[in-house]
Length: 612
Image (tube, rainbow, N blue to C red; front, side, top):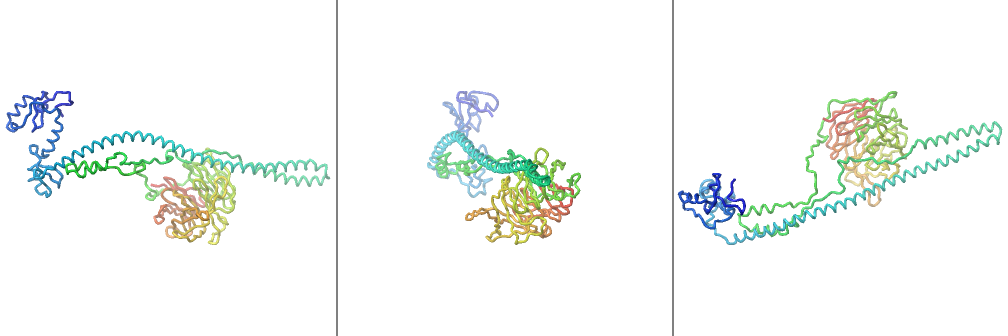
């Protein structure tokens, strides 16, 4: 589009000539056409009948006609270029000419002829006042925005400093935890050293006895002393061997989080305060509200403000599909887990999937813990001190195992492609299930082992919270409350315990699934388990048939002795379904993002079912 002039220093050009791509200096201005005219076009303007009556100014022509052109556009009918606006249709909020009035707007009820409306000096004054207020608001807003940029950088520095303080506090807390662990381990080793000192004294004493025996008695007496000494020295050797088996203890930091998903230390709040940006906002808004309809749009535009204080959030759509909506593939895969030389069929009492995808399982009949790669390539196995009954992860590459008769929980760690014994601790009762809450082990404790029959309501059942390294009992939970009640709930025949993503504990009995939240009693200081949800089994799977449980972000998975797998929503136990899984004598279950792994009794294979 051509222009008569681009800046004040340029010559004003004739508008009609510019349409012909020619340039001629303008010497006149038509107030009707709102166009600059050269001498030739001035003559043509006076010659043509349609324009000969137009008012053409030849002296002191306006230097800038932009405002005049805007006025021309305002007063000209948008549908008829040669007609002036005469009416305002409020039904359609448009200004139209007399032709439009009798044509397209003939049925409009709220249309008025502008010439008949009383001209208001107050309206003109209102517009002038509004422009002045807007000018002040512009000035203040620009100033506020520039100052805001400076203050944001200052805020940023403050956030950096506060976050550094938080990081130091977290580091101090972590270091204090490490000191506590170290002190506990040192005390344990110091006890071993003390025991070695006692053994050393006994050894020296026995050496003296053995040296003195030939001089202190006859051959028969010497022979008796030697026989007795053999047993005593053997006992010393066994004690030393037991202390040797404990091995050396080291501390090593394992990253227990995915750095790419690690949340920032402290959330940054973005506080939008419109009042601090434009001090005269209310004044401007009131000025707009008292103006005529001609400036209504300005009022609407200016009042559109963000009034919300909010936190920065990720607005990406979550495209993840819940496992509650995904089916199980009809085809299952079998992976052989019985080792060469193992005489008994496997009974996979428990299995877990490590953070790197490797699988660890416990074999009850062969008394072994076994490590497999993600594709079930055999990697490592260790002989266990007793028949294992439960296993759980206690870190990205460490597991804990409990036993049927041996009152003990052992730790095993992945080092390279092998499992190594890392230590453990004794427990005072038999274990029926273990889980990990991210810091401590939670263990169901009973007075009789797995093979000793059904536990009745009269039997004492408790959940112990144990230090993961020392086994020190941090808390004991014996008070279980019925949902929405202060009445106590009695556990019967517990089979497994699990901590879900909401940090609730889920206890599986042979016939019930119970979900609890843990709360400290402010009076007694004891931890109380408050029931949140429960499910009684009997329809989807046979009664008294539950063997084990596991959960992920979406659901809880129940494996039954009959080989059925029940999937239950973590938040609504009424939302459940049987999965397309058919097995014999199910014992254990593990789940990752893409598959379900099931171990069975008297079965040398792990059964793998993939989510579609």
